[in-house]
Amino acid sequence: MIAFIKGKIVAKNLDNIIVENNGIGYRINFVQFDKVTLNQEACIYTYQHVREDEISLYGFISEQDHDLFIKLISVKGLGPKTALNAFKISNANNIIKAIENNDLAYIKKLPGVGTKTASQIILDLKGKLVQETKEDAEELSSAMQDAIEGLKALGYKTNEIQGIIKHLKAQGDLSSDEYLKLGLQMMLKRKIGG
Image 1 (cartoon, helix red, strand yellow):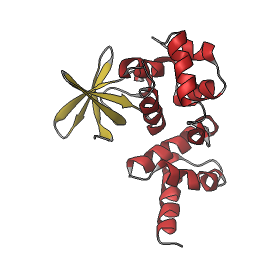
Image 2 (image 1 turned 180 degrees about the vertical axis):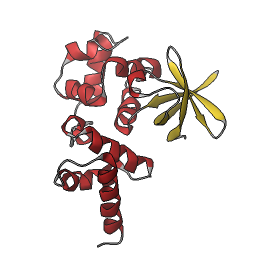
Image 3 (image 1 turned 90 degrees about the horizontal axis):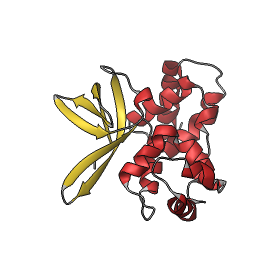
Image 4 (image 1 turned 120 degrees about the vertical axis):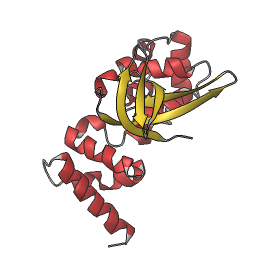
């Protein structure tokens, strides 16, 4: 329901952050504390979890982490808290690689994941995540990654952005602002068919 919340990080607690947006503080279950700074603006991709006795938000720094989380909680026996904790020690790229390579040992290292659950994750998700790693984030400079997050925040879809990454890479080493400006120009050209 809530795709993302953009606002100031006003508190970092043991297992959550509070993001202030237009005078409202959103408490979001969160573990990627090294990626956010107190009193700084951030864009947090969210998943709203509804139970009989509780409505809670789970947050991620990137759309790729968020999308993998959604797939992980579809695995039988894997709840949102365990799925979130996977991002304490890993990221989407590494988890996807482990699933695709049948790396049971790596998946078992994730907090709260035993042999049975690790096997179930591989069984349910292998082959369903490959398209998401077409462009490994590790191959992209941090300036390029910032620009990509900027485009996503402006409402562009991941598959639209994938289409221009090769062209952006060909421009050499630019700042995130330059990549973002160039990316926007390319997106507009594509929209008007130029």
